[in-house]
Length: 145
Image (cartoon, rainbow, N blue to C red):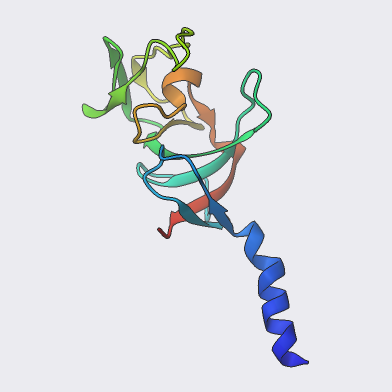
């Protein structure tokens, strides 16, 4: 009986702690999800957060922190940088030719806000929808593979 309890318990626990992504926009495919130890995130952390996007049925996104409160975010000619470290360029239109919104901000990231980024050029992230509130973070994600 004990031999059955361990796999059953693991099988019930695992789905809420593993995320598999099919998109190449993160650079990794499998993540372990854990509770954030605090709300003081750092550049490079992967976070699962709630974000309602127009016309989308998905309201949770997994992205990497690109810029944190107090750091200087700049946008020049569609190029985004955090404390002069390049983050990437925003695309003007999607793959169907529709114009994409452009988040424009030059200054220090406000307290309680995070600028989220994906390493893939087609990642839909803060370059298009702006800052997220740190309070919307659901889980911290750790790349496995």
